[in-house]
Image (cartoon, rainbow, N blue to C red; front, top):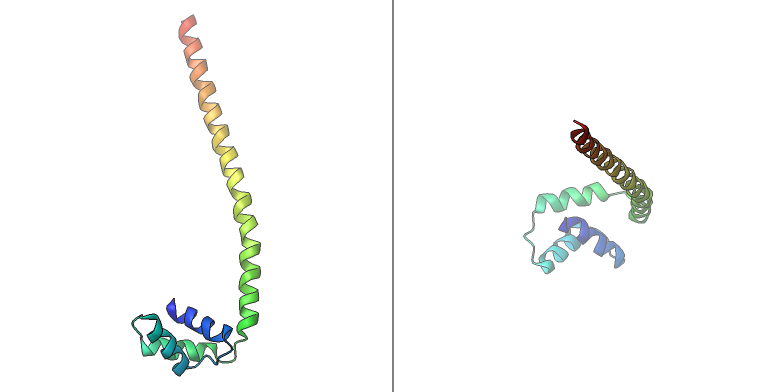
Length: 100
């Protein structure tokens, strides 16, 4: 994850995301550097519009958040209905014992 953060840091600072810059950022963070991961990330980001990728990721995250939030109340309502049904069954069993 530190490699992606390093690339984002370089990009936001207006620097080119290259191996030399990535090595400096990773070294400065104190993290152990894996040169193969640095090279792979730099190659993967070649030709990628980072600003556009960030916008797409933000759009997906915002769109997913309401869907996840909407599912929770339905689950809670279903659970409450099940608990209510169990309580009613329990009460009915208790009344049955009275009339025997």
